[in-house]
Amino acid sequence: MSVKVALAGSTGSIGRQTLDVVAASAGRFEVVGLAASSNEAVLREQIAAHKPRVVGVVDDEVRRKLSAEFRGTEFVADVAHCIGDADVVVNAVVGFAGLPVTLDTLRRGKRLALANKESLIAAGPVVAPLRATPGAAIVPVDSEHCALHQCLRASESAGRELATLHLTASGGPFRGRSRAELAKVDVKAALAHPTWSMGPKITVDSSTLMNKGLEVIEAHELFGVSYDCIDVVVHPQSVVHSMATFVDGATIAQLSLPDMRLPIAYALSWPQRFDFAFGAIDWAMLKRLDFEAPDRATFRCLDLAYSAGRAGGSAPAWLSAANEVAVDAFLGGRIGWLQIEQVNDATLQRHDGAAMRSADDVLAADTQARRIALGIVDSLAHGAGTVFA
Image 1 (cartoon, one colour):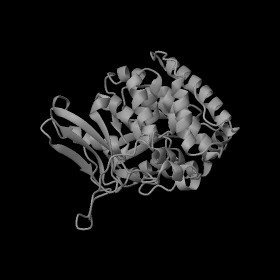
Image 2 (image 1 turned 180 degrees about the vertical axis):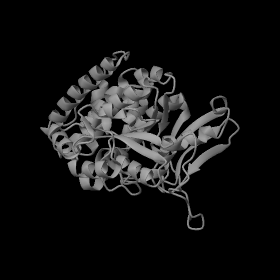
Image 3 (image 1 turned 120 degrees about the vertical axis):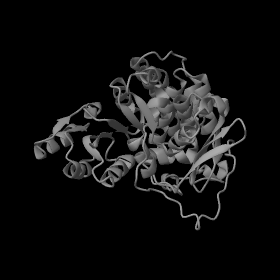
Image 4 (image 1 turned 60 degrees about the vertical axis):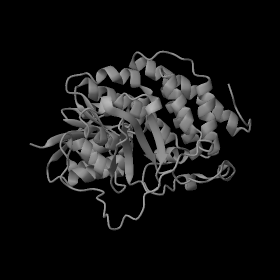
């Protein structure tokens, strides 16, 4: 019997690669639900190829056109509705918009293949109790967290014996550059990632190391490890995807060539492994593996994320929201690359410390942080210079 898959964010990079895995599975997986925002052309191809039972489309006009074309498929406005009777739900929605999919999947006691880190980061205190729902499970799709999932799986008593989780970072396109050199980098340069092909938001996050900072918070939420025991190391080849060091000094690492289809296949197949190799290494061709400490003085977003994580409560939600606003402003040409960090820092300085008990609290924190971040962006865009609380 095939595993039924629902895919939210199907037209993005992770969504398309998920469907590559499905196509390689020889019928092992069946796509029963798709959801996307507005990419009509790609979504049309996906519906024709996979014939899902339910399709969620955010854009009203695109939904109307596709529903008239594919009469046998149910079209809905609510992206989370595509979950239906799926066995596993892939949340590949970009940003905070993925929160409803995360919450609804866990409430229904389903396995969540999580590629949307922002929903877990912003709503960690709300997501945590839902993981106790019978049948609910989170299997991370981010390559680093999937690697840690595999490393900890390799040790039967990992919780008692773990010393440190090491998240690897490629360093992005600006590794080795000074702040002076980064003052005038443009969008094209920020999107030129050296090893991964990703969407614009996550690629910019990789260039600032905010992506790695958010992954630190995600690792804390996923594995229950304190921030003092989560380390970041720069590894430009992106072959070692993360590592776990144990109390006796032994380190277990997961290695493969950069290919997001491997962690996607792992999350879809868990607790088994997928029997088609993605990212297999030719060891005769692998010449070197380099590691170095991140330049925290230049890439300050990393420490902002540690600070927000340690503050807890709604602070990670504020940081995630501010960063989405800042990256959007950078991509739109309103602020410079270095000002992404400035928007994040200034927004966090105004964090109100509100508690996080419900989804409504998460939405309130997100709304408040975005309002403040947008005001900071406006000040910077109009030449006000450095902005602090």
